[in-house]
Amino acid sequence: DTVLTQSPALAVSPGERVTISCRASESVSTGMHWYQQKPGQQPKLLIYGASNLESGVPARFSGSGSGTDFTLTIDPVEADDTATYFCQQSWNDPTFGGGTKLELK
Amino acid sequence: QVQLKETGPGLVQPTQTLSITCTVSGFSLTSYYMQWVRQTPGKGLEWMGFIRSGGSTEYNSEFKSRLSISRDTSKNQVFLKMNSLKTEDTGVYYCAREGYYDGYYYVMDAWGQGASVTVSS
Image (tube, rainbow over all chains, first blue to last red; front, side, top):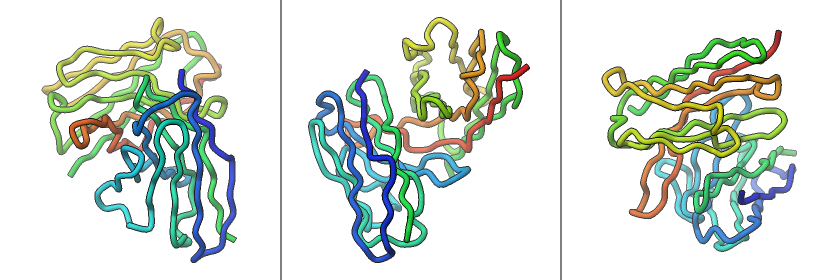
């Protein structure tokens, strides 16, 4: 299985820029997608294909990377962005990262 | 609009079989793959398997021996059945639609709210 590793938690102030990283144990090309999950809710697609913004998602969210290293950037961060963010690869059988919990100071 | 909703038993006894139904609206099951993903305290989000638009299935090898995914297109429903449940199977079970983006990416672009399952005697 392709293992995806994310930092467990981050804390930032509203208005700042935050980058959330995801590292794959093997190359997944650009087959990486990002989801936002708020407590008690289902995951919501933000970014697909490493860098493509899903329809309806604010342009404050962006993604980059290819191969094994990927980032999700939120700039500027707003209070409503408090959530856990997951990466997921679809290059091989789907796997998910452990999630990065974003908290606002 | 696109909607997915899971319904399940809530509580299942160890060794018993879990059955969850995903009812969809706003799109056709014959046009999309449908995924099952679970979220457990021990392992986080795990892909379980999917059923293709044509009706064939693929399973995560971790669940293959005890998992079955099927559907009834006339009722717009997808079914998950998993036997020999253990306490570690406690979690939230999601169905998700898999969209085909840019002629290249398969992406889980719509999710149900999830069915919470507790495995306990």
